[in-house]
Image (cartoon, rainbow, N blue to C red; front, side, top):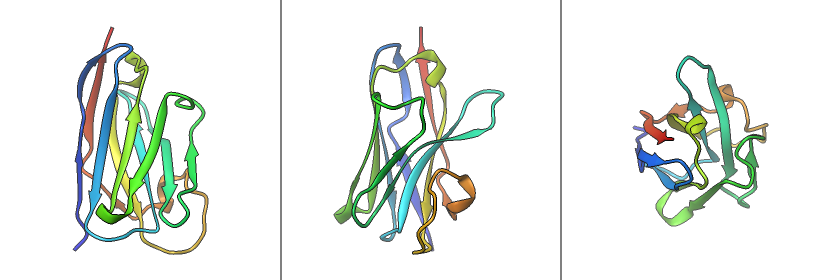
Amino acid sequence: QVQLVESGGGLVQAGGSLRLSCAASFSPYAMGWFRQRPGKEREFVAAIRWSGGSTYYAEFPKGRFTIDRDGAKNTVYLQMNSLTPEDTAVYYCAVRTIPIWTILTRAGEFDYWGQGTQVTVSS
């Protein structure tokens, strides 16, 4: 059974940093992070292919967020720096198990999702 365990969310002041983690119970094809801000649709944040480590980012977090992985632990991380109140959202970890190349910026390309972790940035 697929298990995803997210951690690392919380409350931080503007300009601060948080590091999200998501551990999978298996080695995936790719993992990603999406977020849903209050009153907004879920949006892509970043993704990484497990083999080779290619990374993909939405436009808004470039230079502030970094996605990385630990293959030995089947864990993906999202390091978030220079946070602003606009980054307040529930952040979801997503896993793609199907080993076929695809664009990793679409939620539909991922087949398992974490429970979400709340990130709140105060001004």
